[in-house]
Amino acid sequence: METRFRSGTYKKIKVRLPSGRRTMHFVKRKVGPALCAVCKTKLPGVASERAAKMRKISMAKKTVSRAYGGYMCAKCLRNKIKQEYISGSSIKKENDIKKD
Ligand SMILES: [Zn+2]
Image 1 (cartoon, protein in one colour):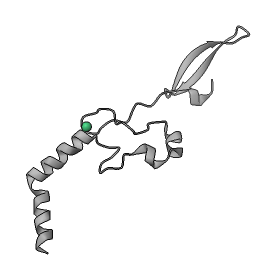
Image 2 (tube, rainbow, N blue to C red; image 1 turned 90 degrees about the horizontal axis):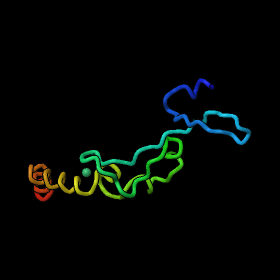
Image 3 (cartoon, rainbow, N blue to C red; image 1 turned 135 degrees about the vertical axis):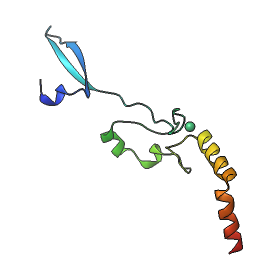
Image 4 (cartoon, helix red, strand yellow; image 1 turned 180 degrees about the vertical axis):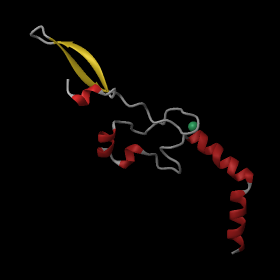
């Protein structure tokens, strides 16, 4: 067995070859779906692959064209915007802009 296969990153599968010999096949583990950073639900429209494949995928498939898209789900973002508006941070900023 090659040394790189000894780590836990590969899943081992016992395979019987046509000749009758038994060998081990090493399969790379699957990557879980992209999750919301707040509520941990699956993010629709966001790809999740192994790092080497992710590099080849275009940015459009990895994010959603929205603030915090690909990081937070729409529900959590809506709540976050509401909370920030209630806390007054955004209201103050709007008022400052109007004065100028
Ligand atoms: Zn969420």
